[in-house]
Image 1 (cartoon, one colour):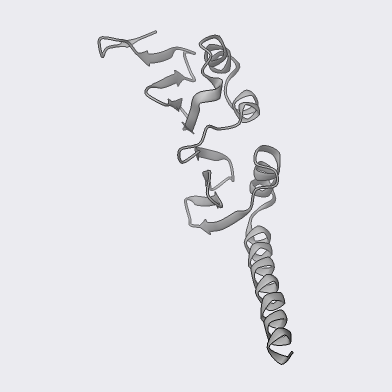
Image 2 (cartoon, helix red, strand yellow):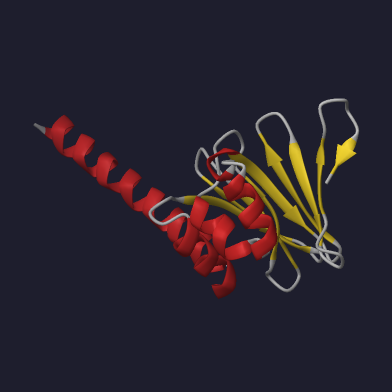
Length: 149
């Protein structure tokens, strides 16, 4: 009987520790970062968050990792082998780039998106697409290895 009580105490203590660690990670993130995860990855547990002078990185348990700049704006969303949600692409990519991905039936196969002040880079399973912010030009690899628009 005593061993059952000890087992229960250990079980509940473990649950408390895991839950408090999750809350500590969540509570340490800026509101813009938590909003990003609740919007695009609802119900998924953020298991790590680290901050530096350049920005921060947060990862979902067994899934996506997102890098944010110092303004808490995403600069890299990596599905780590899983496709990114279509709603994320719709909301976060320029309309012309999203429309291109939709027309080429590629929205379900985007595994990573990165951006900087000049461009967006979209990684698909076997290829990529680049988008120049200033010109609106979409660049992608052609069959012969050259880039085509």
